Image 1 (tube, one colour):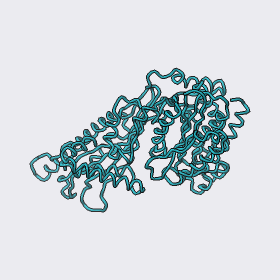
Image 2: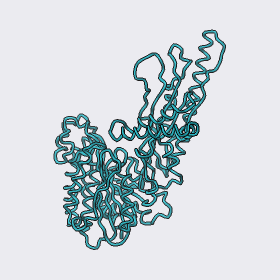
Image 3: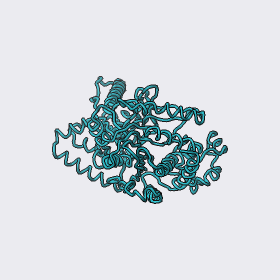
Image 4: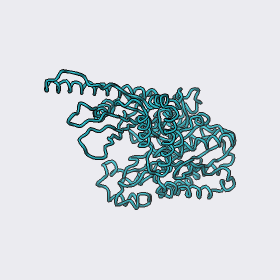
Length: 553
């Protein structure tokens, strides 16, 4: 791409960026669909797509309560080799913008208007606002900057005669919630592959990157995985005046949280990189009013990031920690009970409680075997009602996961205290090019190639990370766990089916290496979200263009 065309590219990025950010496409709301007519108009404006209407379109997110679509386009050049560009167009909401909400999506005025909020800025954000090098605003970094760059590049490639290779772009909804857009796009990629005889070489996301050093960029050769374990604890009812007749599930879950929250034994390590340890996000009993009885049911869930731990291995490890926590509680209350009996001159005896932990697949299989068809029918009916409630927006996926666990326990013969561990949507597989056997040498050495290009062009190094740790749609670019994910994930996810599923078989058909190349951004999802303008308008587009031409040539 020559200098004059780059001037045009910069102007194109600016035009797309201001209009793209202006759209209030809040994730999982009706406003998210406001992007679709903008993108459709953009494609209709391009001469290439007017001449080749078969090379762009919309692909529905099936059974989506918001009727969202993936908007896609393709520049069809010579040969089969294809690069897939992806970005998401949903953004988080703007409650923290307070008095400057009207300007949160206005890139022409937000940098000036947001000065009234400086009392909420940290010193670094104040410096970045004053130096004029950063563009503030909701979606500026995460991730309409990357999306604008991709669209502008697509327009440039459409003008190039005899373009070598093919470029497919996917503009995706819902990444900030459940990645419904990317999961739907897997089927689209499979269709495009067969219809146009495409050979997928690489998937490029352009999420913003964060830096440890200001003068050193970052590219990621994969994306971290995510599990959302749900934990249901049933205790045994008792009046507080006769507390040893019951078992408080708050005691059990508290010990479980203490044993696991921020426990680095649960952190994944891969080639010098590590995930943050698990963190519990929710813990609540099911009492609806005050009385002097202990609660009988607790619902809780935690967030887990993975790099190379297979789901069934993590569940087994979590089950072991739950059993240990349960045993510690039983030992502690027996010690307390012994002292109590001594004080009232009663003979020592132990309480009847036993460690009882099951993962959801074990519980479901056990109840199905005992109750048979009557339970299966009850479960299917409950699931159908849940699907309707979720589609109507009356229930969320996590609380309905607990409802299904509760149904299983109601049909179970075992009425003793228990911990049940399952999985709630979403599930993100961990992926990295480092685990791909026989990886093409161009891909294997791509980060070194990027670093050499950047050093020559700007004297700025780029380093490689094996995983993008912000969670991204790249998780669905490939599968490399040597396990049956339907057994390990689907079997332990109560909602698996119509409400939520991942087309694992289709991913295997379209699988490809991946990389994240995006502009430098800061404070995603915060009032001070911002993107470096030099990256937005110059460095990132040139790096992307170089990488695309390097791979396709």
